[in-house]
Structures are given as structure tokens and as C-alpha cells.
Image (cartoon, rainbow, N blue to C red; front, side):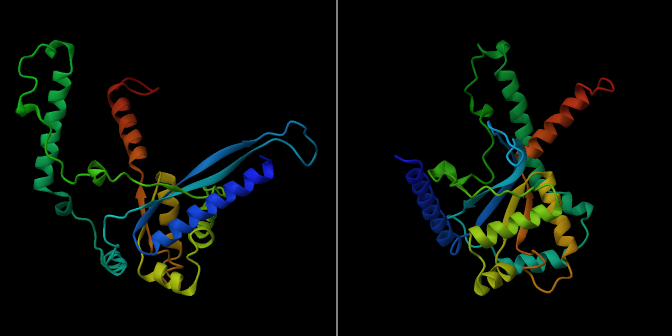
Length: 254
């Protein structure tokens, strides 16, 4: 197999997968994750115009959601435009507090049961130690694993505002082909696309939306984008805060 044959085969497979996801997103909801990547380009025979370099890019992935209804984009936009200030009463959820308390109790009991001192405990399998019932069970538990469709890596530095604008234009325009007049109208007025990323990504997108708040249409104002912080980064941040609170930092003990 020649190198040309391999490249053409990979390109054909890639284009076939892209056509499949383009067909899917026209009928079902989906969300997008994006993050920066750093790629070292090594040159073993270096010349003035051909040297090793370390460059930044953006990697994005589409996650189709086939088991839910389409997001109501008009309701989402109306709610976001008329949303008032967040009050203290909005944060009070009595039923949610009960569920969180039950999870905390179960978590503490599991620490005890998993310790060496309770390995011979006779009632380890008692129903009192069963986990609380799930609130919203993930559909994957019923044999519906999450699908992932990696998109083409883009040579775009995602750290800046301009970079985030460019990669979103590339994903929705060039790769997903939402660039016809009908698709643009639907994207700007009817669709809602959750965009999951780290704190920097969500902050940049929120800033872009503020800068474009007075633009002429929903597409230019990026009203379709519902930025969501990635739970992995939230989990890591929470872990660091707990460690610094109890273990301390370079400045001193916790």
C-alpha cells in the first residue's frame, strides 16, 4: 500500500463519517466539546524556511443525542432575554437538599465499610447501605452508549477571542455545512447547541456574545451557543480547593 493510497482511503472514510453526522444533526440535537491542543512539528533536516516548531490548535468533537427531543430554541432565547437577577430563593431546593444529604450519608458510610476495620462486619450487605436511587439515570445504563464524532483538528489558537470565533465558524460552517441560507436561519433562530469546554473556553464565548449583543441577527449574536463548563475541570478545581483548604498551599498549612 502506497502512502497516496493510504491518504486517499483515510480521506474517504473521514468524508463518509462527516456526511453521516451532517445528516444526523439536521434531525436530532447534539452538543460540541472543544479544547486547545499543542502539536510539536519536528524537522530532522532543518533549513531556514523549514524548522521544528511547536504550534497550537483546536480539537472539537460532536456528540449526537438520539434519545431526546429537539431543544426548543425559541423558548431558550426568550428565557435568556427575560431572565431576572438570581435571588437567594432561587438557590433553595428542599427536595434537592434531601437528595444531597442522602448522598453524603451514603458516601460517609462507604468510607467506613471499605476501611480495613469493617471488612468482617456481618451486615455489610444490608439494604440500609444501598446507594440512594438515581435522580436522572443516564441512558447509557440501558445499552445506549454515548456516540462521539471527532471533527478535523483546526490550526487555530483557541486562547484568544478571535480564535474562538474562528473555530466556531469553522465547525458550524465548513465542517458541519450549516452555511446555506436555510441552515443559517435555523441555527440563528431555532437551534440550541450546548458547547462544553474548560473555564477559558466558556469565558471567551460569553465575552464574544456580550460584544455581539447588538448585532443584527441571532446568528451574529451567537444565540445558538449555550456554553457549559466541563464537569472534568469543575471536578479538578473542586479537588484542588479541598486539598488547599485541608493540606495547605505554598504559603502555609490549611
